[in-house]
Image 1 (tube, rainbow over the protein chains, first blue to last red):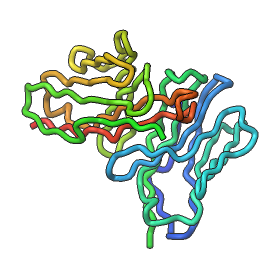
Image 2: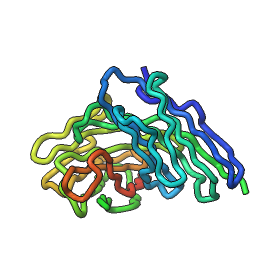
Image 3: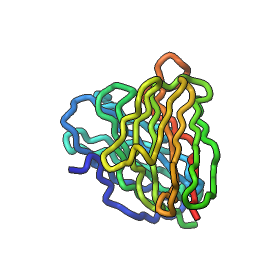
Image 4: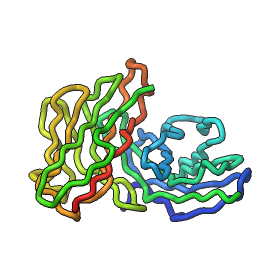
Length: 116
Length: 120
C-alpha cells in the first residue's frame, strides 16, 4: 500500500482565493511526522509546514495551514490568499518514528497553477 | 537556517563516462544523507541512504555498482554515476536531516538544490 497518497495531479486556483491540497497517509506507527514541500520549476524543495502525530493543534505557517485529521489519516494543506508565486508542485511526505535517519515517503505530488 | 549545497547544479556528459555529484551540509553535521532521483513531473524516488563512515544502504532496484555513494565526512556525501547512459539522465537531489541542538529544526529534512544530469 502507498504510504502517502495525493489524489490531485493538478489543481487550479484563482489568485487571492484559498485552495486545499489533499494528502492521506498510511502507517501503523503511532509516532510520525507529516511534511509539505513546495517544488517550483527550479527544482529546489522548499519546506512549508510540519505536523507531528502527537500535536494537538493544526500547524500553521503564515498563509499555510495543515488540516490534520488523525482518525481519517489525512493531512491536507490549505493555502490562503493564493499568489502567482504559489504555482509549483506540492509534495506531501511522511517520516515514521522520530529517528532523524528514517527515510521520508513522498506522495506523487500536486501541480498547482494560480490563475491571475 | 541549515543549508545543503550540491555541485554541480547541472552537468552534460557523454555516454560511458562517469559523473560525480557532491552534496555538502554547510552549517551542520550530517551523519546521514539521502539521495533521490526525480524524473520530470514525477515524485522523488529514494535511491540510497548514505551513512558517514559506513556503506550506503540502497533501495531495491538501485544498482549499487552503478551509483557509487561515499560519505567520507560529516559534511560531505558524493554520488558517482558510473558508465552513464542516456537513461540515467535525471534530476538528482540529496537531503540531510536536521539535528537537534545545531541551529536547525529537529524534525526537518534539508534538501540540496538538485543536480540535473543529461547524458548524450
